[in-house]
Amino acid sequence: MPQRKGAGRTAAPWLLVFTDPQRTPDVAALAARLPAGAALVYRAFGARDAEEVARRLLAQVHAKGGKLLIGADAGLAARIGADGVHLPERSAARARALKAGRPGWIVTAAAHSPRAARRAQAAGVDAVVVSAIFLSRSASAGAPIGPLRLAQIARLAGVPVYALGGVNDRTAGRLKDIRLAGLAAVEGF
Image 1 (cartoon, rainbow, N blue to C red):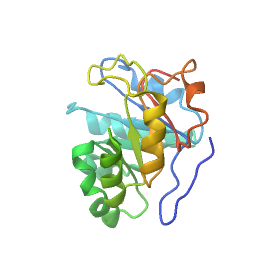
Image 2: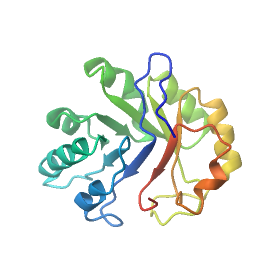
Image 3: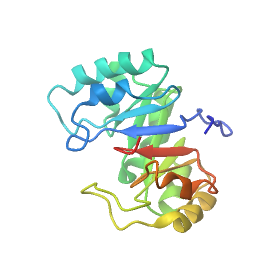
């Protein structure tokens, strides 16, 4: 999917690849496979070496023509010069303030309902990541919402939407008729 730019919003990558300490322990290898135009979302989850790892990932991802977003840690993102931040749903209200301090940042947020997507849009995010669409191996994934519910959220969101959760080469085709900014995956690409 090509990058799209909404009115007053930063162009979003066509693919978001999320790291996970359990399912993607070798983040350098994951970054090495990142396609051009995609973004890696590094979720450090409090790792002691997070800044060192993030700096290496930033160089690696930029060399491939990609972007690096930092999950839930705007301070880390600012310190290393990341391309933006991905926020949990509960933190989406911070988007406008974060973008005011870093106008070029891409700021995405998780959204698990049309209401959450609209709140995130009102808060100034560039895009929302909706999950779980299909059955997922993620410990935090809830019951899958399926393509129909995803389509409803995408119609009502008012902001570009990414599909996450069980999205892979077998399931992605079921989303082709839904207007999405792109896909998101942990293990699926």
